[in-house]
Length: 403
Image 1 (cartoon, helix red, strand yellow):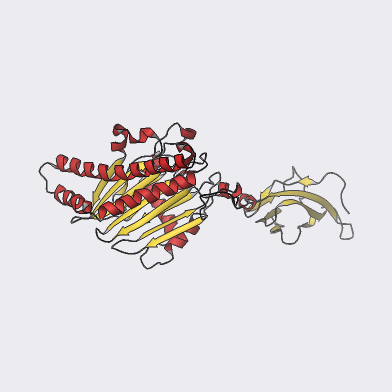
Image 2: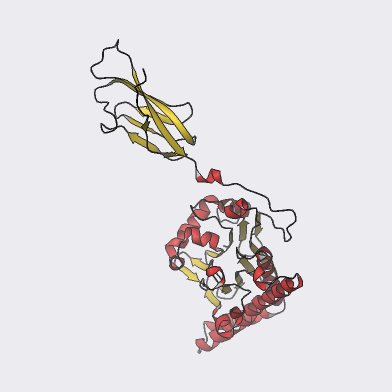
């Protein structure tokens, strides 16, 4: 017999998350009642524990559901009818199930794969990179705006890596990021094969024993400034020419750029970097922690960051500070990543300087994509890892790791 009155409304649940609700006297007094049961639709994922009068489980179906609470009052006899109260329960869907993916219009130019990855095993290190279109771009039928390029330059035994993030508000930024990575790395690879590697290595090899370390260090900084600064400038100029030829303004191609070269020396490794925009670029050594090779910077465009395509990027006072280097005997990981990762996993710029946050990052990556030379699937696994879920963080994600 169904008891008259409005159904009892249970607290909402959420698909895939543990749920527990204990009936109390304030809701319904079941003390002393006989044969207390809760009947739920098949497959809903709930069970009822009679001793504790608790409804628990892991909901598997979203939407509004009607459950039936049946019992016999405490003073009832076995012949008395069973009473039934209707229970109303709403289960919120898993937010991930609400995201949809749409293909960009066939008329759009500058087409780009939604997922890309690359693995280089030549030389003494392994270089793995991956990039994935963000959920927000998939929902809005946009292309991935991130990009990357990775090379191993055999003559110099140097690694060259670039990662870029096109501005979300710039309608050709997917091309801007591609051109930035492509032109900057091509310049570095060409220069390294032309003798600059020996010059850099010479400075690095003499720095340790130099009587005037500051002078040698500045000479090395100046050489890297010319090399990396020119690579960035060449990319920026080419982007400007491309924009003008297409009838666009340069801001339509706005992009960040993280650019590195990693060169073996007699004492270990020389790692030089150029950084404009947000994201993260760090050299991680487990025994020493993290050394950032620059810093994320804010600016006027979209109220978020600065871009390679801004004139002020190449003002001498600004440009020189964007080039940094480290000399280390060895390292565990050189990591370049866009803000789709740093915003989600580091949350603040201050956290980029915390070694424990980088250890958490690498631990998470190693669990999904073991960073080992014998793992030939590491780049593809890295691309899958990029689909990790963090509420509110749905941007493109790109990462390159030299280990």
